[in-house]
Structure formats: C-alpha cells, structure tokens
Image (cartoon, rainbow, N blue to C red):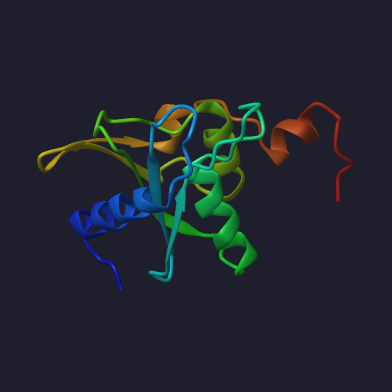
Length: 141
C-alpha cells in the first residue's frame, strides 16, 4: 500500500518506463490512488496521428474504473524531465467525472519538489451530470 506522497511520486516515475513515445519523446507517468489505497498507474501511449494518443492520467483512470474503483484520494503526474506537468483539459474533465474537486493533484518538479493543486483549481466550473440536467440535456431521474 502506498500511503505517503513521496512513495506515490516514485510509483508514477516508475510508470514512465512503460511510456510509448516515439514521436514526442516526452514521457508522462501517473499514479492514481483509490479511496481504499489501491494504486493504478498509467503512461502516455502515442499514436502517429496524435489525436488517438492516450494520456497517462486517462490510462490510470480507465484501469481503476475497469476494476470497479470510482472514488480517489490522490493523483500524481510526472514527466521524464520533471517539469511539473499538469493534466491536460481532456484529462481534467475525465477525472472530474469520478473525482471530487478537492482531489489533490501532485505535479512532480524533481529533486523532492512538487507543485500541489486540487482538481477544482485546475478545472473550475466543470461539466457534470448536474450541468447537463440544468441545461435540459439529460432527463431527470
């Protein structure tokens, strides 16, 4: 079980080894910890047309949801160059489907340094089920 953030960062860094990045050579790894402590990792997987590329955060999230986990308490994102990369807008929206706005998002800056945000800071006013209901796009239950 990965309990502290330093260990979770190490797990995300380990995921970098599995990245498939023949085009950008920019490796990204993610570690998403579920509420029960299970950790799911992801890495970026590029495609020649770029739009079909998979991002590390969405790979980790998909694996977690596939295994029945839909509550999370931390996400770490890292890159091979330790530049504090944050989840892109698409990944933020995907995370918002399953994560609360107060989810800690830790971005690895290397040398035992990190930037910390909440998902809500990174994606305010997210599109949600309630947003769609308010717009009349989804029938009320």
